[in-house]
Image 1 (cartoon, rainbow over the protein chains, first blue to last red):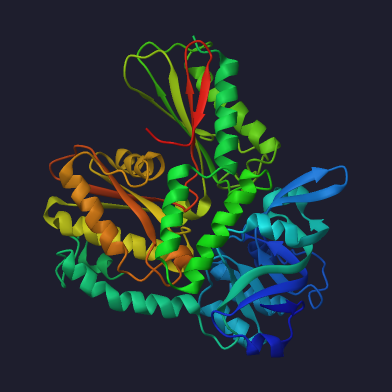
Image 2 (spheres, rainbow over the protein chains, first blue to last red):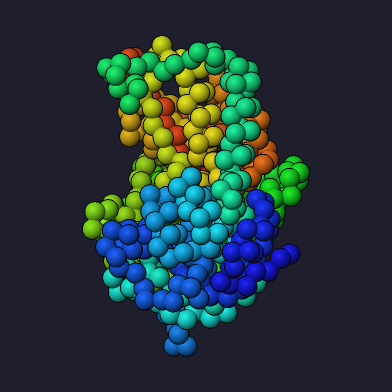
Length: 213
Length: 300
């Protein structure tokens, strides 16, 4: 399996294809909803060298404070699609070439990734415990007091972290959108066999104009 | 009489165990699904998830790091008495949740909905959520702890007030579309258990859907043959969508469709949908009046 050194280069990103499984090694920072909202709406974000720490990991890890420092208990990638409102702005602002998370992102983020030459990597199964062991160092934490352990930004050093698969490539293609198109094609036959009429519509008790909203 | 300390111990241990141990029926269902899938990505999603559960069971982490909403389902008998009265159930649930969070078996995930402030212990108005029901004439208590993940709850909750003229076709269309949408890109972490409530009021309908998803053994059907047939029909239909584990190309988007019903208004046909994710976290404690506690991952 291909291991990619972070920060990912444009050439590496552009060579990746949908469905490719990869691991990554290097530095990454974490964030969830609060990171996105604060960075874009309030211009508040950790003072990192985003050229060097260029991989954004969507996660709210379980962290334990020990006498030897912070320890990761488990870290399961969180659903990235929730951040779509801010996804493209965050990719452009920090020129991100690697996003890692769960699910996928929308057309706006895919467009921004295409512009900067980046990819979105989605998780394979639940692997929060294996991923924990691939985090070699918890380097820093930001906004812990304000946001708590789950929404804080952590900086991790990782080694052969993953695997993940390419769900959005650097050319604007989305693995899950292609799959959903196939599901849509299967649907009419399934509905027919369930006895759902082709022109079935739920009873609308609201003004007709609201049905088109 | 059940002592407050017994209750707290049972609630803590059930919650802690739910967070690190996959119930046996869920595991068996995932292993069966793994044998059915042919797409390499679908197979890998399941193999990795089962390995992750093995690590958690060995004391190396959690079955999933999003321990989600702390829920307790408590069933008392007609002769059950509790030290401090039934109010003690809520106090014990809060203490058990705080302790499990402190010890990192639960992630501090519950926040104020408007301020977004996080007290760090998963406590606050409404949480942990305790649902109390009464059944039988016993003097013991049966409780199930279910840390319910965000993915399945946030992306896998739908409600639709249908009308009698919308018919069974409407129920089927609503459930099928909900499965398709919630499984897109693995949002609810499939293979999911789909709970469906039909009837009642809006809140009863959703409560039935949630309990159907969380508390029924995988593979068990509703005792009413009419309902059981609808469950099987919807499960079979879901397997033809072409969606597999974590939204990949495959067969097993859904492990089970579990329906519960309640009588409803003659003008109404309410339907609720609530999903449980592939780890299906729940663990049960059975407490006797003489403070004996037994734990089980099985469902009655």
